[in-house]
Length: 155
Image 1 (cartoon, rainbow, N blue to C red):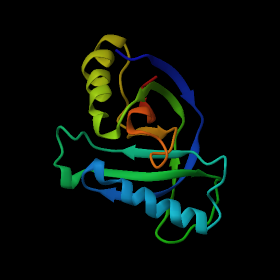
Image 2: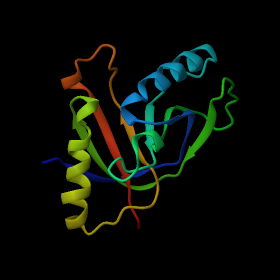
Image 3: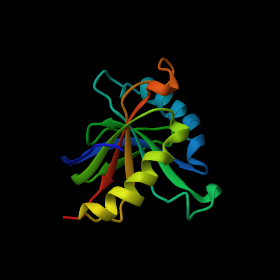
């Protein structure tokens, strides 16, 4: 159903804000992060936008889901407004490119964890899933949104 690429990511650092609750409500946290990052001068043309998702929404109540909204920054960047530096450990990841609305991201996740991973010979690490958002929902039709889903793998 989807193409899975096994890739190696290098370590990187995010300027991040925490979010607790329904993953579909993280958008307001991203907006706050973007405004502050622009004001602090850490949002550049090279900035990449990421979300980190710690919990399985099938087993954790919506109000208890933990996530982070983040943008890439250089190590040692000094931040304010409650934004923290969050290191992302590099390593091996299964990467799936999903095209479509954010509210249908459960479809590729169900396929990855329910079909691909059990048949792949790979095992996921007990680390958060990270998503990279490759275009802007403010100027892109929802059916054309591109999200790179990265599942951390052992080995």
